[in-house]
Length: 73
View (spheres, helix red, strand yellow):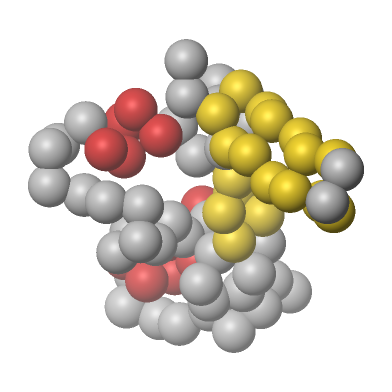
C-alpha cells in the first residue's frame, strides 16, 4: 500500500492510502482538475511524478488539432 502523509501540526498527522480513485492533478493549460490513473502514467517505466503533466480532455483535443487552450469556454 502506498500512501501520502502530512503533518498538520505538532500533534496531528494524516495518512491517506493512494488508490485508483484518489489521485488527481491540474491541467497545466486551464487548471481543471483531472483524475489520474497513476498505474497507467507510470507503467512505461520512464515517467515520473515530478516531470509528468496531464492535460484535460478538452485541452488535449485542442492541442492535437493544432490549437491552444487558455481556458474552457
